[in-house]
Length: 300
Image (tube, rainbow, N blue to C red; front, side):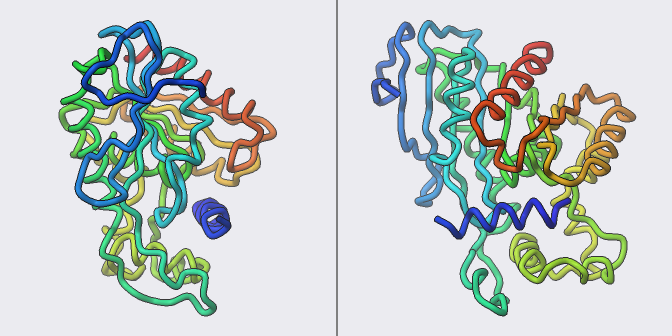
């Protein structure tokens, strides 16, 4: 499944509402507000847009949303449809960019082999910085300081699972995680299995981990696999996993569901009928958001 998902992400990556915009110094709670390009770090990609619903209060839930793009590409502007859908259901939405794994030469033939300064571990650090920024801002935003959901699409969903079930969320700031079309495992039992992956995927994973997919590095690939992170987690939070019907990987999603259930983690597995990886048209995205909202309301 992960081969197809990353291939779809990379294919899209290389083809490249009447609200007031405000600073967060003065935000009337009765009005819908948008604060764009809020910095949560010094890197140019460490930016987030904050969308605040009208009539919000300290019980208004917050969703942090992460775009996809195979870890190497993508932008928050590409998931604005999700922002609007969550906003219309009464959520404050933090739509965030994060630092990207270096994509230089990935479109070449043969694929350029080189290391990346940014890895998945850095992207997880960015999510922690995002939650720190949210924590210091909820007072001025007039939203909940505890009802937080982390969601993402594709690679962003994989990052969401890794963060929510990993040790960076040991304080359980994130109470619920939503995976929309994310990969649940990049692990392999033997390097001969990994060698069957497409060269592009192998290179992306090399850059994302910093090590090649060989037997001595099995643990590094398990560390970027939600299945194995959740399996070793002592603080896994409630999770909803949503697979577009046209994506492969039903067996992996069901195995992940069985794992979460065996560990007494509240979870749900949903298939969006007729949907492809991008969940177009937006009515398919709406199905996902409605399901996430229903699940989250019982867990937050």
